[in-house]
Length: 420
Image (cartoon, rainbow, N blue to C red):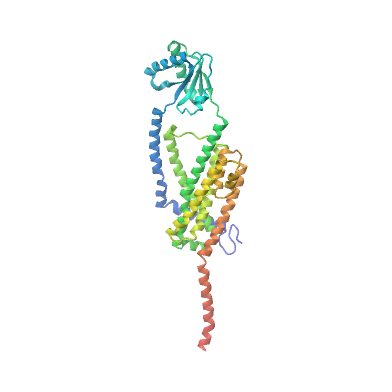
């Protein structure tokens, strides 16, 4: 058995051979023209979406502008509406539009959560109390922005803009447990979808690369020089490195899109493990999902000889991935259930299920176990795929050589008799 430095036979070790294959494939693909066009392909929709997002943001600012809901006595509400109308003539949209939520009877109270959490998307904050002591309830950012305009409207409603501005009491709406869980669920769904799309988009390169090298006999030359599982590992990690290059390019373009869209994209809720850990786990789980699917594609590539066969054989794997994604999505909706446990244990759905757990459940120990389990599955599939490749593709070499040696030995035994 050879070590990391090679044995007496002079052959490279498996790790060294895998590194050589990975470096060769990475450099060959990275500087090819086809890869450049592959990178540019998804950028065109991003550019179009960037322009559409900017237009959509301006449209939302003009059409769906948040309004100030008022729940006060009839006298105070009427004075607020008249004061706001007068101020809007000179200040324009600086003062928020006031809509009447309820005209309260003397001594009647009103819960602002009825409007803020009751499906009124047009209500940015709720004004209660009196004109002398207004109470502004809403999100922290919104009520801080509206503190001055609300004080100006209240002062104008009481005795004109020359009157001292009243002190506005701010009440920030605390995020409930239910809304926090809903936000984390949306974050988990977005992470799962992004992971699935990137994996399906990029894993196909493994299959096409292997079939191409089978056609020009490069793969057989490599298999004759180094262990076949080292060839498979090298190709997998080369394609993974190429995928990270593509993700870096597309991620940079997406970052420009997000900054240009500004408020056009709603901020996602913070995952349970925090954003730094979530980003790291997302990268690791993408690598695991890619390696798992790529190892299956390599095994399928050992059975295909033409592009048509590649398309035929890759279809079941693609459909399987769709079923796996649906399983992980269903398990995400039922944390702690048997379905979620099955999705976590099944290797192909495990990355999607675990990235959803990272968004919904704190703790990193479970992720270390899951990554270890997924790594073992990758090694097992690579070993099985390499053995399948040797049996299906490389078996003809030894058979021909063996038959030729038997034929030569037979000829050597027959020649003396015929000569005699």
